[in-house]
Image: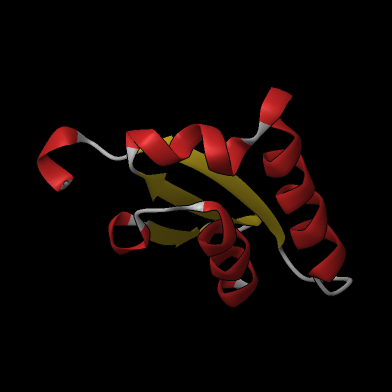
Length: 82
C-alpha cells in the first residue's frame, strides 16, 4: 500500500527528496502520514482537497476486505527536518 501512496505523491511533488512517509499500525487501523515540503503541499492536496480525497479513495479501494483500514494524513515538514 505504501508503494501506491508513494507513486501518487511523487507524481505531484517537486521536491521528491524531501518527501517522508511514516506508517504506524494500531489494533484497528494503519495510519500513514506523508510529510511534504511547504511548496509541495498545495500540489499534492489539490484544489479543495480533490487530489488528497482521490488518494484516500484509491487506498480504500485497494485495501483487501477484512484487513485493517488505512488512514492517510498529509502534513508539512517541520523546519528542522528539511
